[in-house]
Image 1: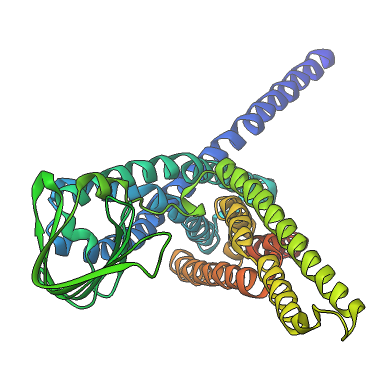
Image 2: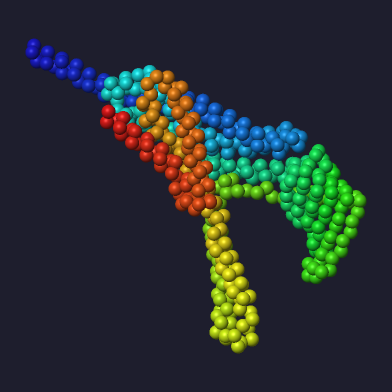
Length: 442
């Protein structure tokens, strides 16, 4: 009898242990899915918020250039569509920050975190879904910024060229310089289709340089023929390429000037490093460094040549026939040395290096935001979602300001590009880790 009782309780204990193992194994997955689903829901809401802000900003930037020139709405919609990768790449990291703050803040204020901890779960169970979300958002943001953004830029430029052909007035702004293939048009004030104080620089069919001045011009869209300018009170001067003293000039009351569709199509929409992929930016940096080294070496040869000439003059003394060229040689050497320093101070490469670091820093800011957001969310007392949203927006503004200031310091002051772009991420990650350690120890 005693043996049966012992066997009965032994079976109960074994069965209970098996149930406990099943529950412990199953419940973290359920908890993981629950936390992750709440994080995704808050991320989606915050993404719509930031998307709306950046999207409206994009429309406002495009309104003056496109909407005022009466570009057809389908083409405007396509231009906005091709601009969306930029909006998405900026919105996702900040939405990850604010969404995580709101979710963890609500968990804390509703005592859900307390229930998880008293049930035997550690902070690792809370951090893991947020870390997974941060890594996923970082990778997606990087791919959007590195793949979709360059592709969208190509399509944007292609459509923009088509718009320039169909509606040339888009290119004619007040007080601007417009470069076409072989033509430069400098405009003054613009009232409707009337442009004041127009200057046109181009070349004739014989290769002569030509300058046209006009008191005013009427802009007309000539369809397939291109851009038409009816110049009033115009003055023309053309000079030969070799003999500059040989020139012709004329003045007339009315002159019709044409810019062909072919020239308009050749007008390239500038693509900055921000619209390139990381590989293209890296290749551009290598090419620019090779070009810069070549220019520096060429300038050094010229400096050495002028230095040798000056040395020969000084060695000859006042009795030599070249002594009178001493001041000229000194001036040439000083000019070449100044030009060499100017070339060495070329910061165009620095701009590309900063942009290369930026392409990685901004998307992976979502990962560094996670530790800061979870740590701050665990400190919430009341109204966790509202307080998390407010703090998230403030941190986003500070982060964006630090990025902008870092970029300016990198370009103008010479701050190392890595620290200019990655310092905000390092600060967020460091503060988040420190706060997490303090919270766990409590």
